[in-house]
Image (cartoon, rainbow, N blue to C red):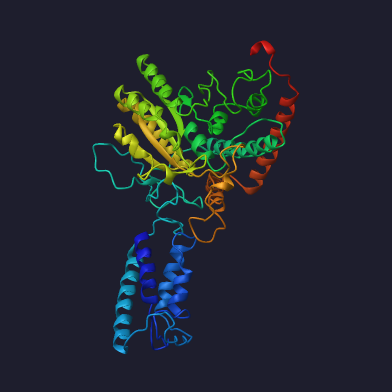
Length: 488
């Protein structure tokens, strides 16, 4: 259907669009006031009203034009039609093409229940088609030129048409907890990002826009499974039971920090929570995850290891080594790649020209899936299915979550120097504004609200309480003494 609308736009653009000469005194293909030019300017593929607008304007095109177009002056730079015969032939050809497109649009089933969403993703990492089929692609089967992007709810939080079979069954309490963790994480990020700017902590990295990747994947696993994070998985840590106070003490590097100030801020971990410590050496968590999963396999444990890394980290040598180790030794490892479009300041276009990162998993002989990383239901379903797969088949799996990093890389980064300002779709002031409107918290919140499980008032209360708690634990952590000198 997306191709249909692209073809529609192409037709509108051809020859400046010639329309009914009975009402329009069209003299050249460059007329700016003709009916069809107005139609073309109002249709924007991918905008919030693209499907509805296109259908309405197709109908309008067959109606009567109510104005007269001015005659184009000679030598004005526009291409004049040489004869009335050519004009008539052009009109007939375009009218026939538009009739064909109109029939195609009417016959095509709506892709979404809310039929106002783009059919192709606008993620920088891979512009692939959306699908609601929960399918892992295997190396020995026919792979499409671009691996589809699995999603279950659209940008408005409405389940996509045909998603019923793949929608995970999540009890109300669990769904509310998932949303609460994302909202609380958002407020914690705000407070401690501000605290760094005030000089109260030395460093911080937010999870803005990527909350669903960490929370959704962690929620889909067993508490016995191991998580090996990169550095933007605070949501997964909170799901595993890390409190605001636990994280604040680590950020303050005080004597209550289990690492006693030896780790960079946000480099948290807990053996009891099966959450391995964050490492500053990018990529090293991936071979560790292969080793953890291999150990569980040797010990006969019903456990898997999930490791997180970004598309930038995927360029580190440790990652392909880990993929190969896990595949060769049948390690039950889930490689979860957060493709957020930026490796600090490096855009994906400066890293690779392939179809995202997922094909690298295929190259090492493991099944892969690409998922809308801003759709927490899709992330949850894909991760849960990945766990079933690795346990049943005794092999690793690869999940590429397409998302967007709304915040700066860290407090040491000025993203205004490199971030793309232009929105991927018309109607938005910037790339950041476009993705902020599609954040996981907003989308899942709308989904829950439609079920009667959530409300604006409830979110306001959650945010106020979380902000108060974050400020309180920050103040408390600052008052705790530093580790003893002997700890060095």
